[in-house]
Image 1: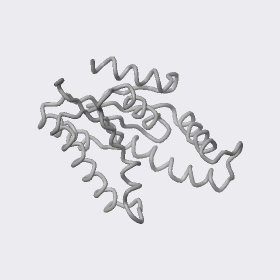
Image 2 (image 1 turned 30 degrees about the horizontal axis):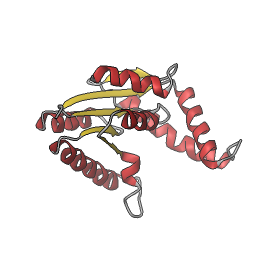
Image 3 (image 1 turned 180 degrees about the vertical axis):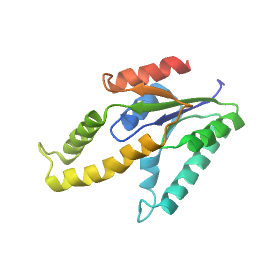
Length: 177
């Protein structure tokens, strides 16, 4: 059995976290993907408040811990602060797993445009209604501020502005093999 690893992919809204972690999950066989957006869908009557997010983060930590305990490598998509990185690194170390942390980033206008484009695709429309634009901006601004207020120096930064998601995934894979 090879040594398991834990890959953290962090970044602001529109930076490419979800696409990158899904690609990594496809390209790295026998690797689990644990993503905050997926876990929050399991919470009945989900509300984005501190208590609910604390429960989701705890569920994620337990999942990651159990996967690594059983020798299964994990890709984590999670918005985090420096202390969150330290918690994940600690779980990896507990199980003798290698830890790799990445924060994806791109200029704000590019990220916001990506959010608009993916929402148009999901809604199957060519133009977003102003109410949806306002809602997305309402999510985007606090998310953007979080990253400005919570720099993390213990992970590698990957600027996704000029890179395709496939290129980002390949950069990460090249660093873990």
